[in-house]
Image 1: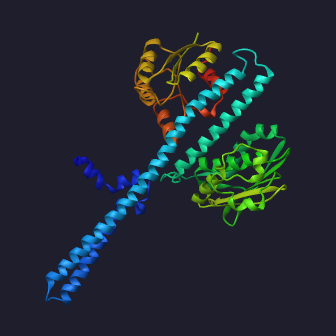
Image 2: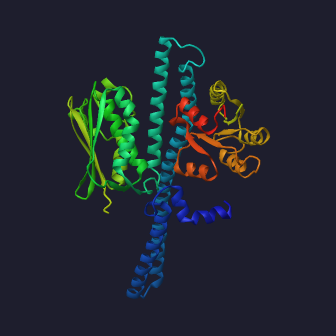
Image 3: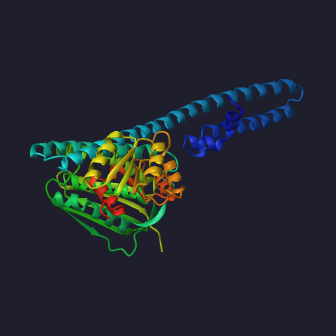
Length: 318
Length: 124
Protein backbone atom coordinates (compact mmCIF):
# COMPACT_ATOMS: atom_id res chain seq x y z
CA UNK A 1 0.00 0.00 0.00
CA UNK A 2 1.45 3.36 -1.00
CA UNK A 3 1.65 6.28 1.41
CA UNK A 4 -0.90 8.19 -0.66
CA UNK A 5 -3.40 5.31 -0.28
CA UNK A 6 -2.85 5.26 3.48
CA UNK A 7 -3.40 9.03 3.70
CA UNK A 8 -6.47 8.69 1.45
CA UNK A 9 -7.81 6.03 3.76
CA UNK A 10 -7.87 8.60 6.58
CA UNK A 11 -9.62 11.17 4.41
CA UNK A 12 -13.03 10.42 5.85
CA UNK A 13 -15.00 12.97 3.84
CA UNK A 14 -13.57 11.62 0.58
CA UNK A 15 -14.33 8.01 1.52
CA UNK A 16 -17.90 8.93 2.49
CA UNK A 17 -18.39 10.65 -0.87
CA UNK A 18 -17.19 7.50 -2.64
CA UNK A 19 -19.89 5.49 -0.90
CA UNK A 20 -22.48 8.20 -1.59
CA UNK A 21 -23.43 8.12 2.08
CA UNK A 22 -24.12 10.96 4.50
CA UNK A 23 -21.36 11.43 7.11
CA UNK A 24 -23.33 9.91 10.00
CA UNK A 25 -23.89 6.68 8.03
CA UNK A 26 -20.34 6.41 6.77
CA UNK A 27 -18.40 3.38 8.16
CA UNK A 28 -15.09 5.28 8.50
CA UNK A 29 -16.74 8.11 10.41
CA UNK A 30 -18.57 5.63 12.64
CA UNK A 31 -15.29 3.85 13.41
CA UNK A 32 -13.60 7.11 14.31
CA UNK A 33 -16.49 8.12 16.56
CA UNK A 34 -16.69 4.72 18.23
CA UNK A 35 -12.91 4.72 18.76
CA UNK A 36 -12.97 8.13 20.43
CA UNK A 37 -15.95 7.14 22.61
CA UNK A 38 -14.28 3.85 23.64
CA UNK A 39 -10.90 5.40 24.45
CA UNK A 40 -12.36 8.41 26.32
CA UNK A 41 -14.99 6.30 28.12
CA UNK A 42 -12.58 3.63 29.24
CA UNK A 43 -9.99 6.24 30.30
CA UNK A 44 -12.62 7.80 32.59
CA UNK A 45 -13.51 4.37 34.00
CA UNK A 46 -9.81 3.67 34.42
CA UNK A 47 -9.26 6.90 36.34
CA UNK A 48 -12.26 6.24 38.54
CA UNK A 49 -11.05 2.73 39.32
CA UNK A 50 -7.50 3.92 40.03
CA UNK A 51 -8.86 6.52 42.44
CA UNK A 52 -10.96 3.93 44.29
CA UNK A 53 -8.61 0.95 44.15
CA UNK A 54 -5.25 2.68 44.42
CA UNK A 55 -3.69 -0.43 46.04
CA UNK A 56 -3.31 -2.25 42.72
CA UNK A 57 -3.26 0.32 39.87
CA UNK A 58 -1.37 -2.10 37.59
CA UNK A 59 -4.26 -4.60 37.58
CA UNK A 60 -6.78 -1.80 36.92
CA UNK A 61 -4.68 -0.32 34.12
CA UNK A 62 -4.18 -3.74 32.54
CA UNK A 63 -7.90 -4.58 32.73
CA UNK A 64 -8.80 -1.20 31.18
CA UNK A 65 -6.19 -1.71 28.45
CA UNK A 66 -7.53 -5.18 27.55
CA UNK A 67 -11.13 -3.89 27.53
CA UNK A 68 -10.12 -0.98 25.28
CA UNK A 69 -8.32 -3.30 22.89
CA UNK A 70 -11.26 -5.75 22.70
CA UNK A 71 -13.76 -2.90 22.17
CA UNK A 72 -11.62 -1.38 19.43
CA UNK A 73 -11.29 -4.75 17.66
CA UNK A 74 -15.09 -5.24 17.79
CA UNK A 75 -15.63 -1.68 16.51
CA UNK A 76 -13.11 -2.25 13.72
CA UNK A 77 -14.68 -5.55 12.60
CA UNK A 78 -18.20 -4.03 12.69
CA UNK A 79 -17.20 -1.03 10.61
CA UNK A 80 -15.30 -3.26 8.15
CA UNK A 81 -18.53 -5.23 7.61
CA UNK A 82 -20.46 -1.98 7.13
CA UNK A 83 -17.82 -0.73 4.73
CA UNK A 84 -18.06 -3.93 2.68
CA UNK A 85 -21.84 -3.58 2.53
CA UNK A 86 -21.56 0.08 1.47
CA UNK A 87 -19.03 -0.91 -1.16
CA UNK A 88 -21.28 -3.67 -2.57
CA UNK A 89 -24.24 -1.26 -2.65
CA UNK A 90 -22.18 1.34 -4.52
CA UNK A 91 -20.95 -1.28 -6.97
CA UNK A 92 -24.53 -2.38 -7.59
CA UNK A 93 -25.62 1.17 -8.40
CA UNK A 94 -22.59 1.68 -10.64
CA UNK A 95 -23.25 -1.64 -12.36
CA UNK A 96 -26.86 -0.70 -13.16
CA UNK A 97 -25.73 2.70 -14.38
CA UNK A 98 -22.98 1.33 -16.65
CA UNK A 99 -25.12 -1.50 -18.02
CA UNK A 100 -27.98 0.90 -18.69
CA UNK A 101 -25.71 3.27 -20.59
CA UNK A 102 -24.26 0.40 -22.58
CA UNK A 103 -27.74 -0.86 -23.43
CA UNK A 104 -28.84 2.53 -24.63
CA UNK A 105 -26.36 2.75 -27.49
CA UNK A 106 -27.53 -0.34 -29.41
CA UNK A 107 -31.12 0.69 -28.71
CA UNK A 108 -30.56 4.11 -30.28
CA UNK A 109 -29.00 2.41 -33.30
CA UNK A 110 -31.97 0.10 -33.55
CA UNK A 111 -34.53 2.89 -33.16
CA UNK A 112 -33.04 5.10 -35.87
CA UNK A 113 -32.45 2.19 -38.25
CA UNK A 114 -36.11 1.16 -37.90
CA UNK A 115 -37.21 4.76 -38.46
CA UNK A 116 -35.09 4.95 -41.60
CA UNK A 117 -36.66 1.74 -42.93
CA UNK A 118 -40.18 2.93 -42.05
CA UNK A 119 -39.66 6.31 -43.70
CA UNK A 120 -39.56 4.65 -47.13
CA UNK A 121 -36.29 6.41 -47.93
CA UNK A 122 -34.66 3.05 -48.62
CA UNK A 123 -37.51 1.75 -50.77
CA UNK A 124 -41.25 1.25 -50.70
CA UNK A 125 -42.52 -0.38 -47.52
CA UNK A 126 -45.44 -2.81 -47.83
CA UNK A 127 -48.34 -2.58 -45.41
CA UNK A 128 -47.57 -5.92 -43.81
CA UNK A 129 -43.95 -4.85 -43.32
CA UNK A 130 -45.03 -1.58 -41.69
CA UNK A 131 -47.03 -3.60 -39.18
CA UNK A 132 -43.92 -5.51 -38.15
CA UNK A 133 -41.73 -2.41 -38.15
CA UNK A 134 -44.22 -0.94 -35.67
CA UNK A 135 -43.78 -3.98 -33.44
CA UNK A 136 -40.00 -3.51 -33.55
CA UNK A 137 -40.31 0.21 -32.84
CA UNK A 138 -42.71 -0.21 -29.94
CA UNK A 139 -40.58 -2.88 -28.33
CA UNK A 140 -37.40 -0.89 -28.62
CA UNK A 141 -39.28 2.06 -27.06
CA UNK A 142 -40.44 -0.23 -24.28
CA UNK A 143 -36.92 -1.42 -23.58
CA UNK A 144 -35.72 2.17 -23.60
CA UNK A 145 -38.36 3.10 -21.03
CA UNK A 146 -37.29 0.27 -18.74
CA UNK A 147 -33.63 1.28 -19.00
CA UNK A 148 -34.48 4.92 -18.25
CA UNK A 149 -36.43 3.88 -15.15
CA UNK A 150 -33.56 1.66 -13.96
CA UNK A 151 -31.14 4.55 -14.45
CA UNK A 152 -33.34 6.88 -12.38
CA UNK A 153 -33.52 4.28 -9.61
CA UNK A 154 -29.76 3.74 -9.57
CA UNK A 155 -29.28 7.52 -9.37
CA UNK A 156 -31.88 7.83 -6.61
CA UNK A 157 -29.71 5.59 -4.45
CA UNK A 158 -26.75 7.96 -4.64
CA UNK A 159 -26.30 10.86 -2.24
CA UNK A 160 -26.96 14.27 -3.74
CA UNK A 161 -29.64 13.11 -6.17
CA UNK A 162 -32.32 14.93 -4.23
CA UNK A 163 -30.21 17.88 -3.15
CA UNK A 164 -30.72 20.32 -6.06
CA UNK A 165 -34.00 22.10 -5.35
CA UNK A 166 -35.08 25.33 -7.02
CA UNK A 167 -38.36 27.28 -7.11
CA UNK A 168 -40.64 26.73 -10.12
CA UNK A 169 -44.31 26.93 -11.06
CA UNK A 170 -46.03 23.54 -10.97
CA UNK A 171 -48.84 24.87 -13.20
CA UNK A 172 -46.41 25.99 -15.90
CA UNK A 173 -44.56 22.68 -15.75
CA UNK A 174 -47.86 20.77 -16.00
CA UNK A 175 -48.96 22.87 -19.01
CA UNK A 176 -45.73 22.05 -20.83
CA UNK A 177 -46.16 18.33 -20.10
CA UNK A 178 -49.81 18.35 -21.25
CA UNK A 179 -48.71 20.04 -24.47
CA UNK A 180 -46.17 17.30 -25.10
CA UNK A 181 -48.70 14.54 -24.36
CA UNK A 182 -51.44 16.11 -26.50
CA UNK A 183 -50.73 13.99 -29.62
CA UNK A 184 -50.64 10.77 -27.56
CA UNK A 185 -53.90 11.75 -25.79
CA UNK A 186 -55.64 12.73 -29.02
CA UNK A 187 -54.70 9.45 -30.70
CA UNK A 188 -56.32 7.65 -27.76
CA UNK A 189 -59.49 9.86 -27.93
CA UNK A 190 -58.75 11.41 -24.57
CA UNK A 191 -59.20 15.01 -23.53
CA UNK A 192 -57.03 16.53 -20.82
CA UNK A 193 -58.48 19.38 -18.77
CA UNK A 194 -56.32 21.45 -16.42
CA UNK A 195 -58.02 23.29 -13.58
CA UNK A 196 -55.58 25.64 -11.90
CA UNK A 197 -57.16 28.82 -10.61
CA UNK A 198 -54.54 29.62 -8.02
CA UNK A 199 -52.58 32.82 -8.45
CA UNK A 200 -49.38 31.05 -7.54
CA UNK A 201 -48.30 27.45 -7.67
CA UNK A 202 -44.62 27.95 -6.98
CA UNK A 203 -42.98 25.02 -5.25
CA UNK A 204 -39.44 24.31 -4.22
CA UNK A 205 -38.16 20.99 -5.52
CA UNK A 206 -36.12 19.58 -8.36
CA UNK A 207 -38.26 20.35 -11.41
CA UNK A 208 -36.70 17.51 -13.45
CA UNK A 209 -37.79 15.03 -10.78
CA UNK A 210 -41.30 16.47 -10.41
CA UNK A 211 -41.58 16.37 -14.19
CA UNK A 212 -40.95 12.60 -14.04
CA UNK A 213 -43.79 12.24 -11.52
CA UNK A 214 -46.33 14.31 -13.51
CA UNK A 215 -45.34 12.54 -16.74
CA UNK A 216 -45.75 9.17 -15.07
CA UNK A 217 -49.21 10.04 -13.68
CA UNK A 218 -50.35 11.39 -17.05
CA UNK A 219 -48.87 8.51 -19.02
CA UNK A 220 -50.63 5.97 -16.76
CA UNK A 221 -53.92 7.87 -16.98
CA UNK A 222 -53.83 7.88 -20.80
CA UNK A 223 -52.67 4.28 -21.11
CA UNK A 224 -55.28 2.83 -18.83
CA UNK A 225 -58.35 4.61 -20.18
CA UNK A 226 -60.17 1.83 -22.03
CA UNK A 227 -61.41 3.56 -25.19
CA UNK A 228 -62.01 7.25 -24.79
CA UNK A 229 -62.43 9.52 -21.84
CA UNK A 230 -61.46 12.54 -19.83
CA UNK A 231 -58.48 13.26 -17.67
CA UNK A 232 -58.92 16.07 -15.17
CA UNK A 233 -55.92 17.67 -13.54
CA UNK A 234 -56.40 19.97 -10.58
CA UNK A 235 -53.75 22.14 -8.93
CA UNK A 236 -54.69 24.09 -5.82
CA UNK A 237 -53.35 25.43 -2.53
CA UNK A 238 -54.34 23.37 0.48
CA UNK A 239 -53.17 24.10 4.02
CA UNK A 240 -50.02 25.86 2.89
CA UNK A 241 -49.14 23.15 0.39
CA UNK A 242 -49.64 22.67 -3.31
CA UNK A 243 -52.05 19.86 -4.05
CA UNK A 244 -51.84 18.17 -7.47
CA UNK A 245 -54.50 15.71 -8.54
CA UNK A 246 -55.08 13.74 -11.73
CA UNK A 247 -58.36 11.94 -12.21
CA UNK A 248 -59.19 9.47 -14.96
CA UNK A 249 -62.13 7.26 -15.85
CA UNK A 250 -59.91 4.33 -16.75
CA UNK A 251 -59.72 0.72 -15.69
CA UNK A 252 -59.01 1.49 -12.02
CA UNK A 253 -57.00 -0.66 -9.63
CA UNK A 254 -58.49 -3.83 -8.06
CA UNK A 255 -58.86 -3.62 -4.26
CA UNK A 256 -56.48 -6.51 -3.64
CA UNK A 257 -53.72 -4.83 -5.65
CA UNK A 258 -53.98 -1.37 -4.14
CA UNK A 259 -51.59 -1.95 -1.25
CA UNK A 260 -48.77 -2.98 -3.63
CA UNK A 261 -49.16 -0.16 -6.13
CA UNK A 262 -46.04 1.80 -5.09
CA UNK A 263 -43.81 -1.27 -4.91
CA UNK A 264 -40.94 -1.87 -7.33
CA UNK A 265 -41.91 -3.92 -10.44
CA UNK A 266 -45.54 -4.31 -9.34
CA UNK A 267 -48.22 -4.19 -12.03
CA UNK A 268 -51.92 -4.65 -11.26
CA UNK A 269 -53.62 -7.78 -12.63
CA UNK A 270 -56.24 -5.93 -14.66
CA UNK A 271 -53.80 -3.58 -16.45
CA UNK A 272 -51.79 -6.57 -17.69
CA UNK A 273 -54.90 -7.52 -19.69
CA UNK A 274 -55.10 -4.13 -21.40
CA UNK A 275 -51.47 -3.14 -21.68
CA UNK A 276 -48.48 -5.38 -21.73
CA UNK A 277 -46.14 -2.38 -21.68
CA UNK A 278 -44.93 -0.66 -18.55
CA UNK A 279 -41.94 -1.36 -16.35
CA UNK A 280 -43.74 -1.33 -13.00
CA UNK A 281 -41.18 1.21 -11.78
CA UNK A 282 -42.90 4.53 -12.48
CA UNK A 283 -44.98 4.80 -9.32
CA UNK A 284 -42.13 3.50 -7.16
CA UNK A 285 -39.95 6.31 -8.55
CA UNK A 286 -42.78 8.84 -8.10
CA UNK A 287 -43.25 7.91 -4.43
CA UNK A 288 -39.54 8.20 -3.70
CA UNK A 289 -39.27 11.57 -5.42
CA UNK A 290 -42.32 13.11 -3.73
CA UNK A 291 -41.38 11.86 -0.27
CA UNK A 292 -37.79 13.10 -0.66
CA UNK A 293 -39.21 16.47 -1.78
CA UNK A 294 -41.03 16.78 1.57
CA UNK A 295 -44.39 15.96 0.02
CA UNK A 296 -47.00 13.26 0.26
CA UNK A 297 -48.39 10.98 -2.42
CA UNK A 298 -51.50 8.82 -2.62
CA UNK A 299 -54.44 7.65 -4.67
CA UNK A 300 -57.99 6.41 -4.56
CA UNK A 301 -59.30 4.00 -7.12
CA UNK A 302 -62.20 1.75 -7.99
CA UNK A 303 -61.93 -1.02 -10.53
CA UNK A 304 -63.73 -0.23 -13.82
CA UNK A 305 -64.51 3.33 -12.68
CA UNK A 306 -61.14 5.06 -12.60
CA UNK A 307 -58.35 6.35 -10.41
CA UNK A 308 -57.31 9.60 -8.81
CA UNK A 309 -53.61 10.02 -8.06
CA UNK A 310 -52.42 13.00 -6.03
CA UNK A 311 -49.36 14.51 -4.42
CA UNK A 312 -48.54 17.53 -2.32
CA UNK A 313 -45.42 19.69 -2.26
CA UNK A 314 -44.29 22.57 -0.04
CA UNK A 315 -45.61 25.88 -1.40
CA UNK A 316 -43.45 28.96 -1.55
CA UNK A 317 -45.20 31.89 0.11
CA UNK A 318 -44.69 35.21 -1.67
CA UNK B 1 -22.61 21.14 -50.88
CA UNK B 2 -22.47 21.39 -47.08
CA UNK B 3 -20.12 18.99 -45.37
CA UNK B 4 -20.94 17.20 -42.12
CA UNK B 5 -18.42 15.35 -39.99
CA UNK B 6 -19.85 12.53 -37.85
CA UNK B 7 -17.60 11.57 -34.93
CA UNK B 8 -19.20 8.38 -33.67
CA UNK B 9 -17.72 5.00 -32.73
CA UNK B 10 -20.95 3.09 -33.36
CA UNK B 11 -20.67 1.88 -36.97
CA UNK B 12 -24.42 1.26 -37.19
CA UNK B 13 -25.20 4.84 -36.24
CA UNK B 14 -22.57 6.21 -38.63
CA UNK B 15 -24.23 4.26 -41.44
CA UNK B 16 -27.81 5.32 -40.60
CA UNK B 17 -26.91 8.99 -40.10
CA UNK B 18 -24.66 8.94 -43.18
CA UNK B 19 -27.47 7.51 -45.32
CA UNK B 20 -30.16 10.00 -44.28
CA UNK B 21 -27.86 13.03 -44.41
CA UNK B 22 -26.57 12.05 -47.85
CA UNK B 23 -30.18 11.77 -49.01
CA UNK B 24 -30.79 15.24 -47.59
CA UNK B 25 -28.03 16.65 -49.78
CA UNK B 26 -25.05 16.78 -47.44
CA UNK B 27 -21.57 15.47 -48.02
CA UNK B 28 -20.82 13.20 -45.08
CA UNK B 29 -17.44 12.26 -43.64
CA UNK B 30 -17.03 10.10 -40.55
CA UNK B 31 -14.53 9.32 -37.82
CA UNK B 32 -14.68 6.40 -35.39
CA UNK B 33 -12.58 7.84 -32.57
CA UNK B 34 -11.82 11.20 -30.99
CA UNK B 35 -8.32 11.64 -32.40
CA UNK B 36 -9.43 10.88 -35.95
CA UNK B 37 -12.40 13.21 -35.49
CA UNK B 38 -10.15 16.06 -34.44
CA UNK B 39 -7.75 15.49 -37.35
CA UNK B 40 -10.61 15.32 -39.88
CA UNK B 41 -12.19 18.48 -38.47
CA UNK B 42 -8.90 20.35 -38.86
CA UNK B 43 -8.08 18.96 -42.31
CA UNK B 44 -11.43 19.01 -44.07
CA UNK B 45 -13.07 22.06 -42.48
CA UNK B 46 -16.67 20.74 -42.23
CA UNK B 47 -19.75 22.99 -41.92
CA UNK B 48 -21.00 21.02 -38.92
CA UNK B 49 -19.70 18.38 -36.52
CA UNK B 50 -21.94 15.71 -34.96
CA UNK B 51 -19.99 14.63 -31.90
CA UNK B 52 -20.51 11.67 -29.58
CA UNK B 53 -19.02 12.03 -26.08
CA UNK B 54 -17.91 8.51 -25.21
CA UNK B 55 -15.25 7.81 -27.83
CA UNK B 56 -12.09 5.69 -28.04
CA UNK B 57 -8.65 7.38 -27.86
CA UNK B 58 -9.96 10.88 -27.03
CA UNK B 59 -13.24 11.76 -25.33
CA UNK B 60 -15.81 13.96 -27.04
CA UNK B 61 -15.28 16.62 -24.37
CA UNK B 62 -11.56 16.78 -25.23
CA UNK B 63 -12.32 16.93 -28.96
CA UNK B 64 -14.76 19.79 -28.31
CA UNK B 65 -12.26 21.63 -26.14
CA UNK B 66 -9.53 21.36 -28.78
CA UNK B 67 -11.86 22.34 -31.64
CA UNK B 68 -12.98 25.44 -29.79
CA UNK B 69 -9.43 26.28 -28.74
CA UNK B 70 -8.13 26.31 -32.31
CA UNK B 71 -8.64 29.41 -34.47
CA UNK B 72 -9.10 27.26 -37.58
CA UNK B 73 -11.96 25.21 -36.12
CA UNK B 74 -13.47 27.33 -33.36
CA UNK B 75 -16.35 28.61 -35.53
CA UNK B 76 -17.54 25.20 -36.74
CA UNK B 77 -20.89 24.48 -35.06
CA UNK B 78 -20.83 21.30 -32.98
CA UNK B 79 -23.91 19.26 -32.15
CA UNK B 80 -23.21 16.92 -29.25
CA UNK B 81 -25.10 13.70 -29.87
CA UNK B 82 -24.90 11.32 -26.96
CA UNK B 83 -26.70 9.07 -24.53
CA UNK B 84 -25.26 10.88 -21.52
CA UNK B 85 -27.96 13.09 -20.10
CA UNK B 86 -26.94 14.36 -16.68
CA UNK B 87 -27.13 18.11 -16.07
CA UNK B 88 -23.37 18.19 -15.34
CA UNK B 89 -22.52 16.70 -18.74
CA UNK B 90 -24.87 19.06 -20.60
CA UNK B 91 -23.43 22.07 -18.72
CA UNK B 92 -19.87 20.97 -19.40
CA UNK B 93 -20.48 20.52 -23.15
CA UNK B 94 -22.30 23.85 -23.45
CA UNK B 95 -19.60 25.69 -21.50
CA UNK B 96 -16.97 24.17 -23.81
CA UNK B 97 -18.82 25.69 -26.76
CA UNK B 98 -21.26 23.06 -28.08
CA UNK B 99 -23.95 24.67 -30.25
CA UNK B 100 -26.57 22.25 -29.00
CA UNK B 101 -26.78 19.07 -26.95
CA UNK B 102 -29.04 16.25 -28.08
CA UNK B 103 -29.72 13.02 -26.18
CA UNK B 104 -30.00 10.29 -28.82
CA UNK B 105 -32.88 8.46 -27.21
CA UNK B 106 -35.04 11.59 -27.01
CA UNK B 107 -35.04 12.39 -30.73
CA UNK B 108 -36.43 10.64 -33.77
CA UNK B 109 -34.27 10.53 -36.87
CA UNK B 110 -36.46 13.11 -38.62
CA UNK B 111 -36.29 15.47 -35.61
CA UNK B 112 -32.53 15.14 -35.64
CA UNK B 113 -32.39 16.00 -39.35
CA UNK B 114 -34.54 19.10 -38.70
CA UNK B 115 -32.15 20.22 -35.97
CA UNK B 116 -29.19 19.74 -38.31
CA UNK B 117 -30.96 21.72 -41.07
CA UNK B 118 -31.64 24.57 -38.62
CA UNK B 119 -27.94 24.88 -37.90
CA UNK B 120 -26.53 24.07 -41.35
CA UNK B 121 -29.11 24.17 -44.13
CA UNK B 122 -27.91 21.93 -47.00
CA UNK B 123 -28.73 24.48 -49.71
CA UNK B 124 -27.50 27.66 -48.01
